[in-house]
Image (cartoon, rainbow, N blue to C red; front, side):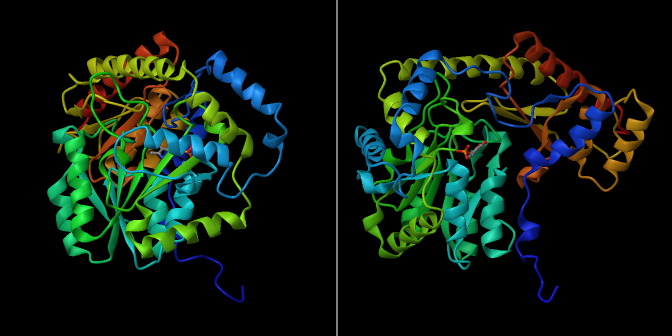
Length: 435
Ligand SMILES: Cc1ncc(COP(=O)(O)O)c(C=O)c1O
């Protein structure tokens, strides 16, 4: 080639959640029935969207508007309804112009980091969610800067670590919060969020809050929308319907822009994000039209409560199955539908194994493990030995070896089998080591 075609950012793009699928397919081709525990897609795991939501989607299909393009930022009626939802709570006030639709939160993520100056960094949590960490890292072709979520403290953000990093990297211009959190399942109480907002205020930073799971907080767990406490700090809140209807195939999400008028530079940046969106015309039209109808339906709050209770019960099942396993540390999930288990320091030594019935597959696993991180080794063995496909925690920018699994399996018996089999596999894997 006359010029190098490969972007310097190419090495920063990774998505462990889907990368493991390639190895899962190899395992499947060797006769193992694979249970996909890697992807947060409730539909793929058998959840059926409730009839009344399906009816609304059918009605929207009959609207001519759902077949055409829509304005770049989205239909005004949908934006007005979402602005009203924000304003019905106390805290920051928004106008319809502060609601901007995207093709899912992932599209918003791509634009928000992709059109941020390469000199301005956004610090994000570790464990990270790869869509954010990769996009942030790619925008400047540098490794993502992270603050710790502490497994010894229910995966809460380590505020002292966050402050230290903000002080030592003057290029940090923004803080990412994912609440409820993927991959840990933690939910942040208002006091933690207030401390992060206070740091943003003190250092003149903006906040990105991914709240795609905000309607999936388990009973008894307390949190707030960022808009309820961030009244004077510029922020971009990311919301969507992939998880809560659930309708991931809608590719529909939106930004709530908070406190835009507080800072001209932030406001100009938001204009750039919208200009970038304009180049691709607009986001999916039909799903946008369903949002005000579904959110405004009196059945919606009951729907959300029922799902939150369902995932809470499944989280408890997983906790009961895995919390007593020696060498494994697990926290109860408080929201979303993921849990993350961490191997205690020193229990993995690089020689641990699980039996793999097929000798050819056993050789493939051995080769796959050469040079692999300790938790990747476990994940490869678990997959080949039991068919259960989870995601290694080090794939989420984490120094802790562990793995993430979901609470999505709809078949009760199968779900209990998954948790029990994972517990037995971890025990056998740790015991097979030399320590
Ligand atoms: C924290 C988080 N943000 C964003 C997304 C992607 O959302 P969307 O389907 O709206 O693109 C996911 C998907 O798993 C997620 O877990």
